[in-house]
Length: 577
Image (tube, rainbow, N blue to C red; front, side, top):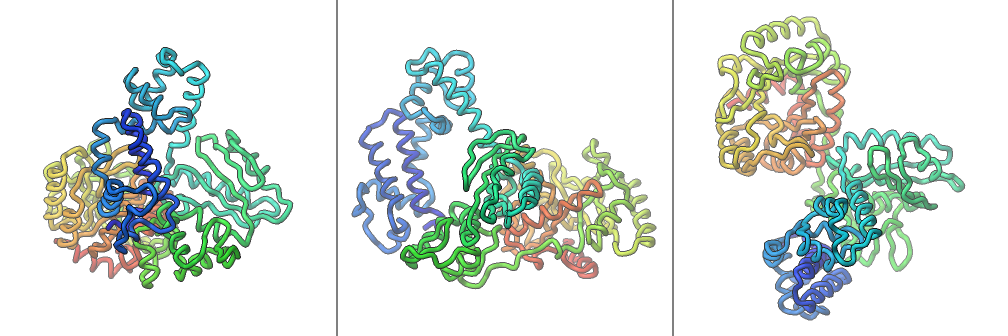
């Protein structure tokens, strides 16, 4: 059975079934049955998955007949529902987003679809602006204006921001609020605190002394474009860049409970509350309660301790095994930025970077690093002004001269070599064999099918010169999809070969992602957290890579550039095939 499927998940599927059946004009009794079943599941004190494990008969539950009980079992055991997949073939899945517009129920959505062929928000907006909607009964001018306003509101709300970009506003807002007299604590919670690579909004928690008017300071911040709501304990604003920020004022004795409540993912929070229920407790944003009496909540540690668990780091709160690890004493000691001794991927002005060898070396030393691999591009992609064999050899001589002058930092000789479409490398082995660090990277042909893309990477791994595969998925967050790769096969091959993988710290990459970083760790694959610095300031981006590594459950021992230089050289020697 899938540990991820909760009553709330099943109820959401049943609500989706009901909505789509309603749009399709199906039997109203069937539609009502799905909605009633969703309501039953949401009010159920125990998880349906637990009832099934205990062998209990789900048809004893109100509104759950044999057919719905079988669907619940299917969802719990497989995580999918064949009936929903079949329904998606009848009714366009994109129609569901229309239901999120206030005033558009299933009947109106059906009318839009059948009469005007509208299947998504873009088409709906076009029809509203062109006057086409005016032709439909029930769509007056005021209704259409409300629809257009709701579409714009949804567009703003649904927009996600790179965490790196949101962090600039989060840090500035935190400093602005802390500077106010009477403000005691300010923490940005939510997916931001968990370290997600993108965020939809910011959830800010504040404690204040009595009489402190923090809301006036919050809503009056210079970056606020629009105040959506303002209250005594909660206010919502949109910043000028479109980012939504919610501020909540909580009592000091409730701060830990609120922080736990607003930090964990939905799945994590549901699991935590369920554990509390099983022990006769109730957890919410105000505290931990037994028989109506608060017993914990001032700190997050007290909240987790109330259910017999140690504190769980925010980055792990995704319901991906952290509860089991906490119960069994297996929570990882997550890597920290201070653990990094070096960086194995940077560029200089010799290719597409913006700093000289000396400038990059001195910036790395200022960032607390002991060694830095210089890995300018090979020549395949012309726009990056990659190094041919002669230019690379001249750079190696320059690195030797500079190492004799530098104190506190050692430069390693390297190159980021293109993996060509057929898996060959864009530089002769005779040259690559002279380097300390050879990074293979995909910079072209991103749309090859899975079989071809996988063969390409596997062939590259056969080259004995490669130490490391850079940004393996090739994704650019919100700009380019990852390559289609058979990840289990690829990771198994990397592990067997003894090669290393990069976790690239560039905010648009953060590649490996958290899921693949953890899968690599489980296979014993060494990972390098690299800045991919293109200028002296970019070494600060290592913080981003470390945060992503923490989400992947990585410890210092999983990351090769936590090693002293001599140990790193030995590890790199083992990584060569």
